Image 1: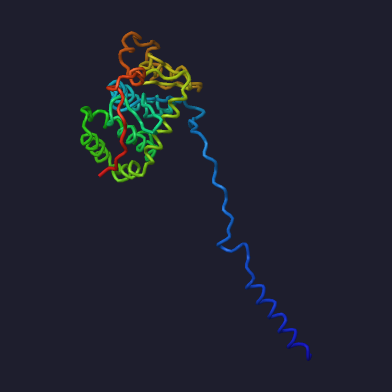
Image 2 (image 1 turned 30 degrees about the horizontal axis):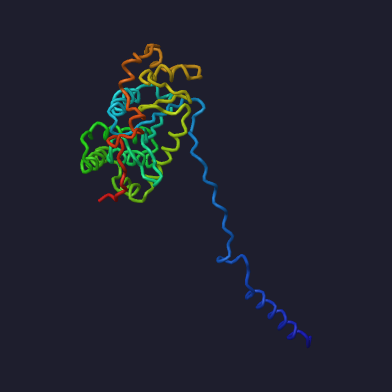
Length: 270
């Protein structure tokens, strides 16, 4: 029994040493999981739906007419039960060696392309961001930066979308990142786009027959039952000679004509 105090002392000493010894599992030495690799954008597809992508730019009158007219109308039909519609704002813009975006219709186009991209990212629901973009394209016509801001702010107010969220997206530079992703996707189109609106249905560009997109969507659908819109829509193409005049050509934006190229200056919103 005389060794009991000594044994207790040794046990206590061992416990003290154990608790004060540094451990690699402390909060300062937690091994962080590696961040997932950043991959190139992949187009989200619904296996049962036809994917249609509209490559466009703000302020192109033909893009505006196509958005506010045929596309807005089709959103109210049963074609949407088989259609996955994507909007990709960039169009005929160019990224120069100084990482400056140059746009066909001036700074306001670059600015509004970014606002569009922010809205698409903030509100993935098609109805929300489409209505916002349609509203802007219908309201804004004259080249005036103040009016450009007023137009989208008015639209966000009407549709009860957060103005501050859009401003934060723009001011933080995230909007520019989004629109540059759109530019990368647009520049990798095969065949390369020649003008906007440029409509692609399940990887097949409709070229100058983009006005007949309903016909091509219905034709591409592999499901068993077609929506009524398909049966009520004539399986004919629009007059190609007429449609060729209804585009904003990329060649004009990429020419040496300075009137067709305007740099985008990234300025914070008020």
